[in-house]
Amino acid sequence: MKRTNTNDLIEELSKLAKDLKGFGADERIISEAACRLAKQQKRIRNQRREIEALAKDKKRVDGFVNWLNAEIDKCQNPMSDVLTNRLWALLESRKQLQKLRNGLGEQK
Image (cartoon, rainbow, N blue to C red; front, top):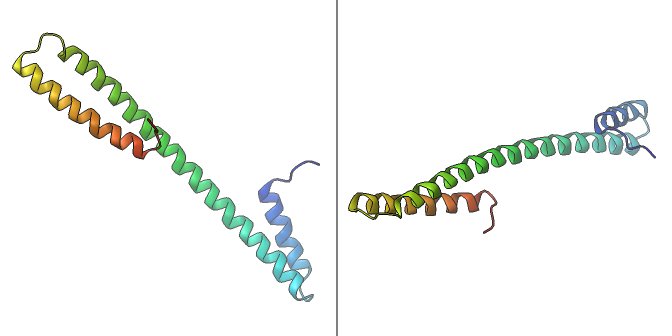
């Protein structure tokens, strides 16, 4: 059996509820089911948008972590005082970004 589109299902339940007016509980139950489906569909849509936004943020953080790793590699060769200070600052930045990335769902 082919699955019905959620919008069509909501619309048909709403129509059925109107057609059953005067029969009491049946109409209220069907109307409530249509309303719940509509609210659930809206929540799912919003959650998908939030997940997409988090995925974009995670990609940006990953890119910055990769840049930091490359900068750290450059600094680790001849260790002058300037490079040592830069290396320390970069290592701290990486640590903070890794904490942020872990908060965005990365498990390492």
